[in-house]
Length: 178
Image (cartoon, rainbow, N blue to C red; front, top):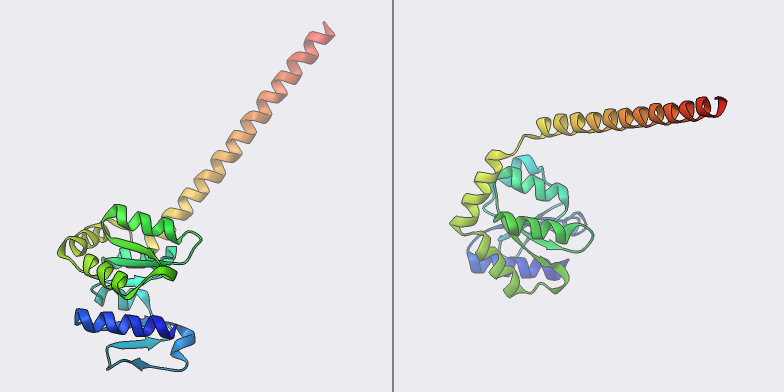
């Protein structure tokens, strides 16, 4: 983590921006790093902090990726594994971010990626996409409705299959009795 903090601070200095790193393990031993360019904190309220950022570099998890998109801020996804590469690909396709494997990210990579997403094109696209997104409460309501509809549809299909099977068995019994 310390190497990443140093790299981030160098990139922030070169871009003349400040950085905020949310890293509970690192925050326990440091609160500020490298000439006040980077603040290290144990946690962040995404809905309050992200809309105030020009760009967000993060691990690329689904929650943080959605929070950044909802905030209307372009992202750099420095992914590790699991579903994170897929989210990196999706933000690139949407024109709201870029991604790179964290383990192979160099200072020059991070600088290039941040310069890319700090352009007007990415900022504008991120704002446009955010305007189309539902808020968190509406998203939960929509998800619950879709889940309920899926369950009802599955029950209806099972009932229909059961009724059809019963009709087939009943027809076979009548034919055998005749």
